[in-house]
Length: 179
Image 1 (cartoon, rainbow, N blue to C red):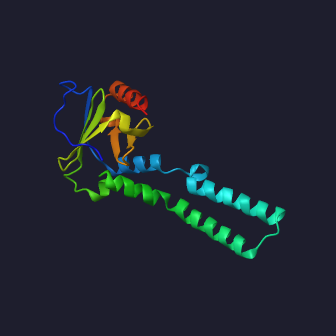
Image 2: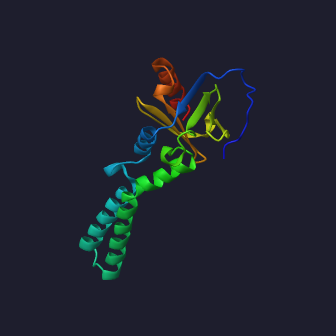
Image 3: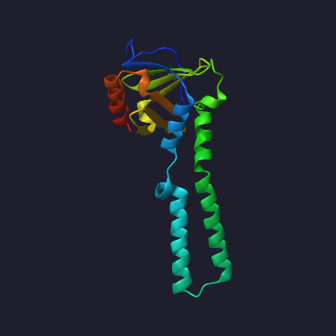
């Protein structure tokens, strides 16, 4: 879990400061970054491997009906999980407070400070999350936003429109180098 703090000891000012209003479009963009499609979805990959195992088992060995039914049931379950992957990722966004639909219209302002060693995110409720760079698991980025996935499972979002183009690209390079 992220530490909470309101002071900074490393330097008096952050390297980058961004304030933004969370929108449904940002939530949708973040969701599309987290949701793999087609052949990159882990559930679909597992299902394809299971189907290959079923074919090998069916042609090479003497197949038993019970084993084939169990494998087919597992594959069907994996297809359901793969189809609902975006629902699971939306739940992650909600846990991180990044679902604009669930926030009141006047409670969507986020403040993000990027320091030389950490990321500080102040949510609309006033709660501040402090995320050291060594806790970054993955950084997803496009020309419209940066989504930082922490090892704790929390997510932080920095939209391009909250910074100038050069500052956005600098933040993007800094965070991408940390993973």
